[in-house]
Amino acid sequence: MHPVYAALVHYPVVDRTGQVIAAALTNLDLHDLARLARTYGMGGVYVVTPLEDQQEFARRIVSHWTTGPGAEHIPDRRAAMQLVRVVAAIADAAADVEAREGRRPRVTASGARALPGAVRHADWRDLRSAAPQLLLFGTAWGLAPEVFAAADCVLQPIAGTGGYNHLSVRSAAAILIDRLLGSPASGRAY
Image (cartoon, rainbow, N blue to C red):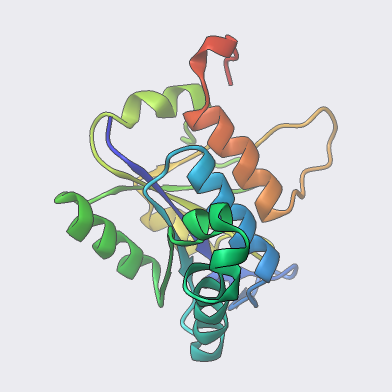
């Protein structure tokens, strides 16, 4: 099976009015996505933002936990945070995966909106054998339309039990990663 990487995309994403924006990073998102990647044996997590101050903020957080005081304080967190890489664009994340794996990754976009041709979570597992995978998770109000248009694959949204569907990126990523990479022995079919 080829490795799976995640990208926490801060640009291009949309705000609640649908305008394309660059969203601000949060410390908690970086920690939770890194821990999720480590738990599920993923290849890494990319933090995607073209904003230099936000890149520096992410690097400071990662450094604190990988080479700074946090590295000794919580070694398990260091192991997770070592999976985080900061890049300016989704294309940079894909290029880095290709350099690491020797093949272009298949890019999969996720979101809360149902889009035509979206792949069921259970069916995505079959696609994993073809190439390394790069899963995109959008911050703010989700990935911009051009990201979905450029992706190789789009996942069906997570369906709860009611009409409400606005999970935090941390929650959505955890649910999707479990559905995509979790043990199939559970018998779940998403």
